[in-house]
Length: 369
Image 1 (spheres, rainbow, N blue to C red):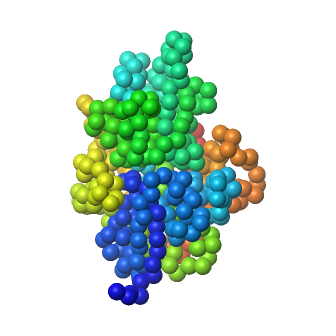
Image 2: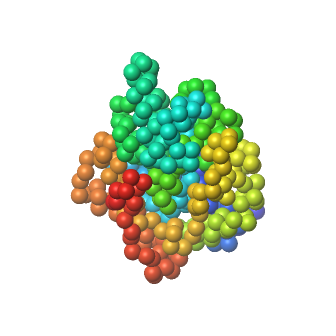
Image 3: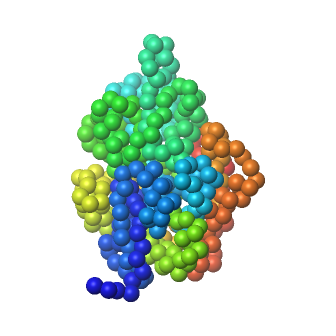
């Protein structure tokens, strides 16, 4: 059947923070803005990166640092990109194997996930293992240019652990993390939900700390578009931003959490148990078998001002790339990063004129950026 809707193909990874795209597609928000939004599930962030670069996808659910890495020519198939909207805040956690958590708890790790306490305890265990001649602990992240990699590295370094010398960090697709932990291939990982809760529910993992405790209210996923597509399709981009903003507001309503969990758990989307979707959507996190903790805004969705990208977000990610040797610091790169995380397209699409001025970023160790 022919329609007048504008077709848009979007790549996504099966994570709870794909909810805004899913709701926009499945609940009619995109159609009401004149867009026929088709979602394509992918298995890895590398596939998302490559397929948007070669034009298979018009837009994508992307890790916040990915548009920066692509624009600065730090990855394969690099292409200039933009991040015109935040699709979610928070939502990640660092999970360790159940046996490792027992050692950390014995070393005084805070059961509530305080990052300073759990990091210090992990450092003591690493020292003990090293003294016994054991191989380094292996942690998983979903991509080298990801909030997960930078949150894990920041947490380790701030608590006295060298991420490049004291542990091994490897890359694995999000939906494989819990199985890799159960198989003993990983000692811990940083990933988005529901793949931390999956390990807790299986009895193989324990959440040691989480993104909201490390960097409160921080951006996690963005709407990723190439500069070329954005310049060729300004009206479609504006329509998508309006659709996603409305979908994000719907996702943020607590009473909608059960329906959203049911939707996301479908076999063609996350393909998981509905029950493991609910903790992050409600903020009632099961950190371990005997401890549930209410974490307000553990995973936050919102349209309006809260979903506007800000240059300070991009600058923080860029500084982490410099810190960990992924690129050099240059004035030209810093200028590009500000353009990538510009709020101009978002403000224009929604008619926003009074976004709050940028606040500094506050990390768990008291440092500000």
